[in-house]
Length: 194
Image (cartoon, rainbow, N blue to C red; front, side, top):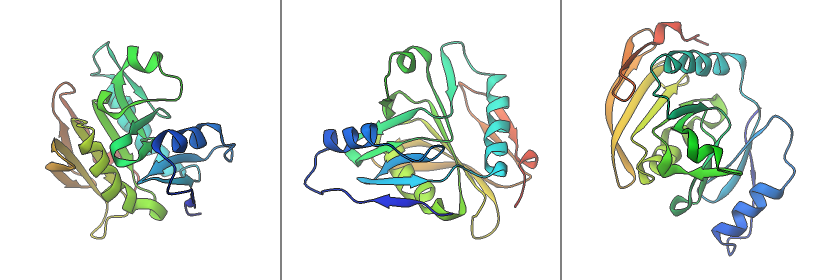
């Protein structure tokens, strides 16, 4: 099943768009994001998708500082890119997330992880990294199960404007190292291949 986009009045401002996102009754289990000003409703991810996120999360817990937490459904806002995103995994300060009602500023994130789905991989490859870089999120890990040359894992960092630098890129099966504050090497051989 593919993502559904919900059109809105282009004259609406960011606050109206967020209010629509917060107040609308969306299908249960769906992932609802605002990507480049367009509300996008995606079905729940497949089991392999969730398994990859769970394996990364398990490894992160072993090295995570006490003031940070891993979130699976926490929305992050990047108003300058008309974006409200729900990364597959988000590492952010516990205190700021505990004080949030529906979302936090993207600038608070330390790491975002996206695992591509076949129907909306373009968002994870193009729109989201531009927004995450704009928010100055230090690290973006893209697990691209549907990359044209086969499954890959790419770590982006050193954001400048709306662009990241590629810090490391590997094929599934090769290790990838996350720098401090994580200091962790992920074994991508643990990731299921479709």
